[in-house]
Image 1 (cartoon, rainbow, N blue to C red):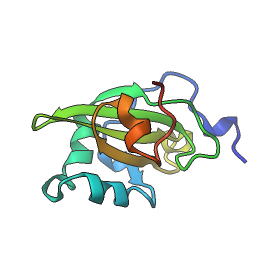
Image 2 (image 1 turned 180 degrees about the vertical axis):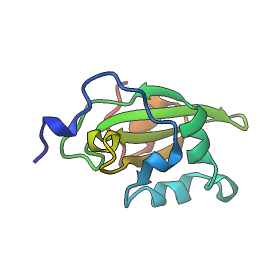
Image 3 (image 1 turned 60 degrees about the vertical axis):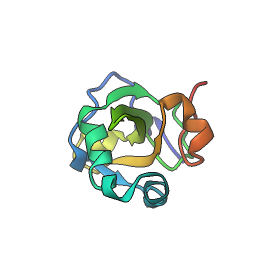
Length: 123
């Protein structure tokens, strides 16, 4: 069961350091299916380092991310890409890492249509 300690409730600076994130068990599948092979190693890193950051939905205590869903979106080589992560409170205190949940081509508003494993996204 999740507690209030699982939710980031105050404004925080979203980490821009890729090593602050760890892929969930299910992240590799959408990465392999949706991202061209020549971009798989650089696309998530580029989105974290330079993408536009926005809230990606509401906290879901039973979701795979167990944290606050946030999106990094950016245009890369003429295509818009979005990476959904979950900010985990413990990761801010050095007790873990934030979770990379899914990645897909398109803006944040398409998340619910293209990413079954993503957090709920407002329409």
